[in-house]
Image (cartoon, rainbow, N blue to C red; front, side, top):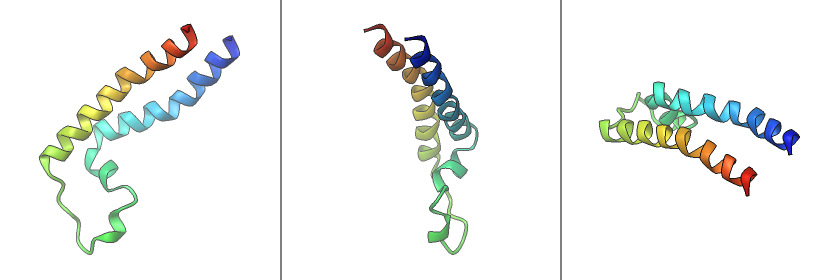
Length: 73
């Protein structure tokens, strides 16, 4: 049980790093892996930026709740 929780925490560290990066640089995270499709630098909509920030905050809050509920059941 304890070893499973430690492994979950270890795997959540890169996930949280991704969520923090998405919140702090939403334009870069949105274009990650897609930049080659455009000849010029595309302009990301403010609605997309707001959605990415909301989604990253929601994921940062929801992920630990789901992980803890899995271990407590």
